[in-house]
Image 1 (cartoon, rainbow, N blue to C red):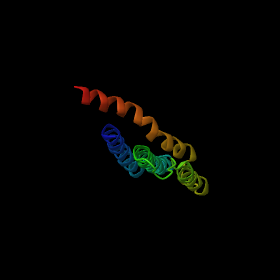
Image 2 (image 1 turned 90 degrees about the horizontal axis):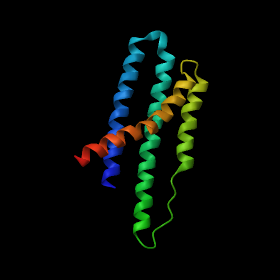
Image 3 (image 1 turned 90 degrees about the vertical axis):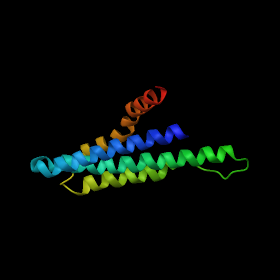
Image 4 (image 1 turned 180 degrees about the horizontal axis):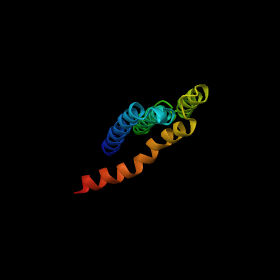
Length: 125
């Protein structure tokens, strides 16, 4: 679990870096504001989903390790509702790009692959 927490923390740092870059681009490029606002909303919701899944995985592993533990699920419905909330914001307001919101939702999970490879290669050496 220690390795998983270091990967989640690294993905969180990279996502915060992308969020700050997206907000900076939102300020500096006024004609592209809907795109970067959608990306910011998608990244924030995707990061929340990613961290929430980590917490649920930790709870499931603790429940499996202790005999007679309570039943724990992965919180799929909660994560789906957060994603739908981000998409509903994009649909409701014209100042938010829906396609970039969806890209931001998936970008955090896609970032987990190269970041985990980097963290694992760094811990081996």
